[in-house]
Image 1 (tube, rainbow, N blue to C red):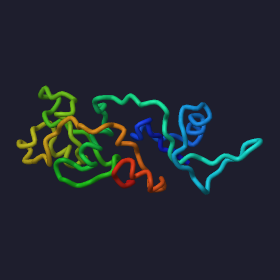
Image 2: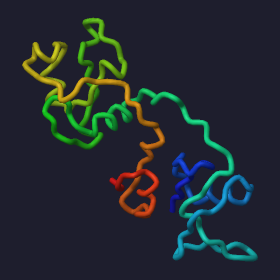
Image 3: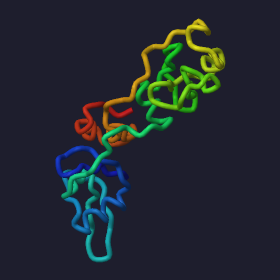
Image 4: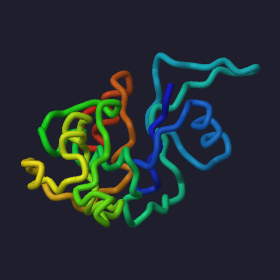
Length: 169
């Protein structure tokens, strides 16, 4: 069981285990917004309902920039190869430097894209136009918050999606 944690302004912060959620509740750092009706844990002297969504009493300090990481590049590019435009799983995607490192290309938001292995191999250490390939879109640093990338699973509560304004994947 997992619990969605919101900050004091109801902004999604993270998803935690039910154990961590109970610690936040019992230490007075959060309040329960909704609970799992069908899920309870038995304590020594009483039973507890597991929290589905918690709200922290404090405001969460989020980063102003999205941290550069392989997974965040995949999120930015919607898990789509930027050359063949096909959606892939993370295990099928690689990172490609638009301007190859061998030619002075940096590992940055503006020079890295998601690419499937066949496209990455085909491009090699060439520029996209030299390999007769066209980028789906120019790579830029995303403006969204990293908290939006909380990984929702199919078995997570449907009501969580209202806090993200997107559906579970």
